[in-house]
Length: 191
Image 1 (cartoon, rainbow, N blue to C red):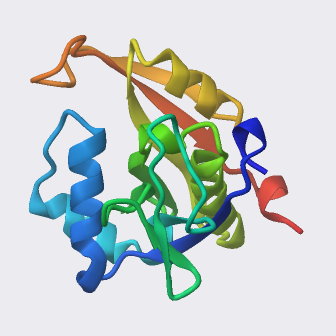
Image 2: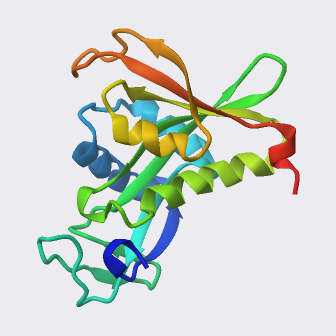
């Protein structure tokens, strides 16, 4: 059950050339920044670390306050106005010594679908992928300093603020960000 007792079926779909436009549309709806082609090349290259979130419900179910309904396509995929409801996009970065760190480029869920556990599912997916690989040392991202909801969200998963970067953003206010990091230790990766 989601927030308010709403039944929600969630599935994740990998990003591929044929559905990359869905990620582009979602990013346009969610973020004040326009991402260049390198972002999308990195997202495609990260494999299991970049996912689109598909929320499937009964066709007559309502979500949000606007009474919108959406249609289930091929059982596991559903779209609201042909736009996926959430996504996480990551980049894998090699560090000196051979370890890898995962950079969360974006994580977002459309407003009517927030509070249903969708962002949690996306982030947990990436954390689980990191736990499966012995050579991943950390997951990190940039968060605008005034985005208290995001900071609180990531802290629930063991992320901590590790740095403040002034004037990181050029076209949004405030321009400062925090680097928020979750360190992956050997004890976390053992089953």
